[in-house]
Image (cartoon, rainbow, N blue to C red):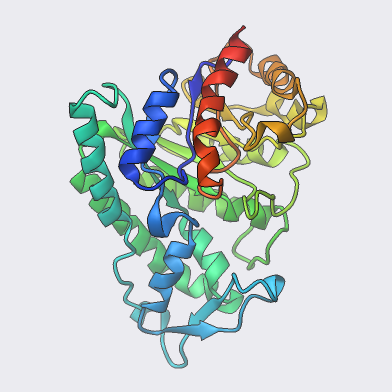
Length: 348
């Protein structure tokens, strides 16, 4: 069965929320189940948005930059100040609930105007609590700060759930730091093994009420459109998907899988034979390249055949590997068009 759906992983490098939503529904008129706000403005570079919140938090202070990124100027870190106990840290508003309330108002108005079709949900993306902790906090303080930061981030989700009608909302958790940790791409603490990471992701999923669809974006990074390391296959993503869906007491409603643009070999897709998730869980594969010229002719078709070989007759869809926040703004309209065109090509 060819793909029939489109998923957007969050960020879209356009001027504002209204522009993002209008461009998506105009250029991709079929197959869209949920629509994001584009993570415009301060959120364009994912959890860099959160670093400012760390700097504003009493009891935290700047630490030496991450040596793995020496010279890049991109990865400062924080630590607990001397004499400050973790339970004394009082996190400020992390900003997500406020900005998503504003974006939902735009969504609601555009739907009332007939721009956004009925039945499409407003999608809000959150980094997992571990993401900002692992990236921005020195290793010796990560386990000490994670519980209170998780509580603060879950509080942002709760405030959003209180502000937006649940029948209009969908939540995505971005699972990038966890993949990097498990692949050995970043340093990890003793509490960040596979089973402990699955427990964290289950908590994230279960924090969302059953009435609100929730999905996981399984990501290998997008810094300068490069992975933190090339995935050897879908094995880790499948293993995580199986473990989280089995461990959660509610459904995981969609999964977005990373597929590098140059991988159309059977070995990359073979782990899909072990995928064991409910048939109602939507599956999306990153068959949409950021730049069509970067992908040899025939690759999406070959990738689609390999997906179909393993998932059989279940419905599935396409996406990009990560969001589109780092795509040149002038390229975004063409990239959105490519989603529509690729659906048509693969259905032919």
